Image 1 (cartoon, rainbow, N blue to C red):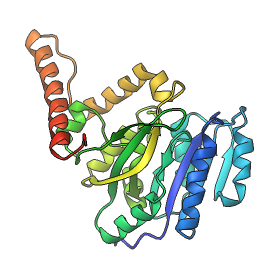
Image 2 (image 1 turned 45 degrees about the horizontal axis):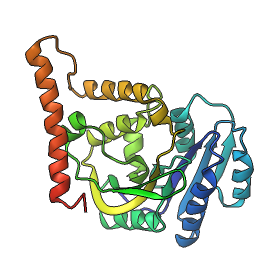
Image 3 (image 1 turned 180 degrees about the vertical axis):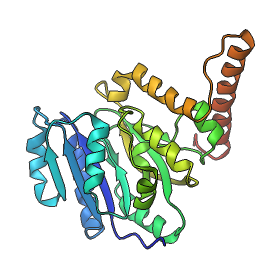
Image 4 (image 1 turned 30 degrees about the horizontal axis):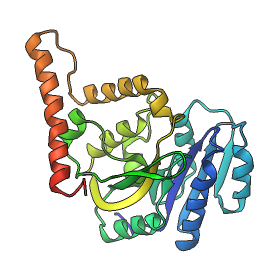
Length: 267
């Protein structure tokens, strides 16, 4: 039986993010006050040496769980964090990203008014290293064909799910350290229909040190493994086969563009 959500747990994996983590923690602590403690904040630091720990210490009284120790990477840190979480609804926020001021309230309201929903994502704003808005990332509803062949368009910091779903699929898989979100979303979507709300719930920061930008090739390799597991084929030695793969991917990306245009995603 799915019950009314009482608390959202947000896990923050961190390693040497002194330039940004203060803003990240501040936005969450502010929402703790708004929601009257219906937000649980968990920080898993990998042993930062750049001043991050001093910033975390400033918020110690508002944080529900903090640890700083060497780990095996971001996915391992997240697994450790979710093991400590007590909330009915879960999500994670990288230590350089932000949530909008009313996100947690809106997420709690959504799950309360949609008793059968298990997995929901909103929209995002893309920001630069100085927190200036670059563009609005409005998305479309979930579609398997577009997601598999056109790319993972579910924005991680604006995505939330019920604890029961996370436990049902076995949680995060540590073999993915860059595309761990795509892997988790794919397993969620095999159990329940992802829901999309046209609300801006997060701000995603683009900057040179961002891991998925620095390790683009490794990210793409992990991403391809996920799609091949779901039945996609990217290898065909024949000329016709290679053309088919290119046309299929082109069609999926084009379909997403048209869908976004029709639904106001570019307004």
